Image (cartoon, rainbow, N blue to C red):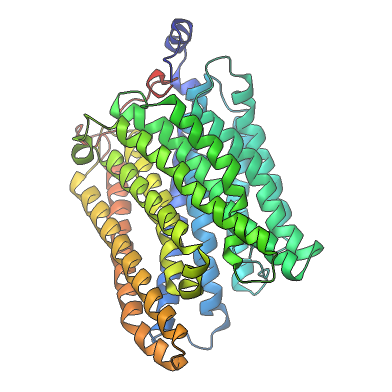
Length: 480
């Protein structure tokens, strides 16, 4: 992409960062995000104990494992990821557009309202008001509030983007698409199967919703933020503008067609199933262009993977993204589906994409920004960030391989018509290792959170260190 014009650069020098970005709002979204991810992880740990037959709260309705499993998934999607991305948007959009968001008061209202929506969802799930829609379990009385909230978010961020007179960075392309798509996807998945269609048609719509939640909500926001932060931290432009456009339009064209691959061998018409298989494989080719673009960008700066912790989070997340899409291209084939469907293979796949990709990108963004947001020149202990990275990374990798192998064991045993109880016995060691690896991930988050607290307490006495937050330019010509 081309650098910003001299006139844009002149405008940049006259813009005050404090006038553009409300850093307190960014910080509070990050705090909320970290709070929810800890709740969600502890909920996942609690659920895993059921499979080990050591569940500590048997016969207690509010602690039903099935309900806490929904808290785990919805807490990650709407509490952890959504809050973190909102905070990052408040940081990036004003810098890319040289304009404030529509309203500061509206921004704080959205923050409070979003926490009310997430907490109400948790309460509704635990008290038995879940919808019978996978990933759309949010109670019926929450859905209208969520849709209104998403519309307000779109208005708040689209206003500065559409008024911007500067270059339209590819980051903003992704953001615009995400704001429009997310409203449509959420309304489709939470209303149509619940009120308008049933049976096979409801399954088809639910399948679209499950995958579009990933592909049209978190994916465009995640990749858009990578196009913003990576060039800034590497201090060099993205390698190819052309490849960035291939990635964007490929996502827009192929990803919405993927969802039916969750229901292969179902009564859904086969032309839809075949279309989903082809589109899923095509997405892997699209993702390859994006990953190649970023790895050619870091060419000559490979030292950043060792010295720059945010870059390390970003690029490991990209490798995981490529892995999940490659895995998806195989598992959607009809032959593969005969083995892995309904097994722990799918559970490992979903954990890698939702946490191993977007979670890792979020931790990279937080590692870069949090010291500055707290008024510190660096981190209290950079070694604790290393512990956070390695415990989280190794824990995620072990969990992924563990559940992938477990899924193959289960699938082949089911194919051979093994006794059901025998498959449960064979799965026990894998489930134990999942709990252990999940515990490592949770411990890693405690290192990070404690480091944040100590950085906030001793922020005035901390000297700049190797993981200090740099100063982002207002309109990053390097990311253009």
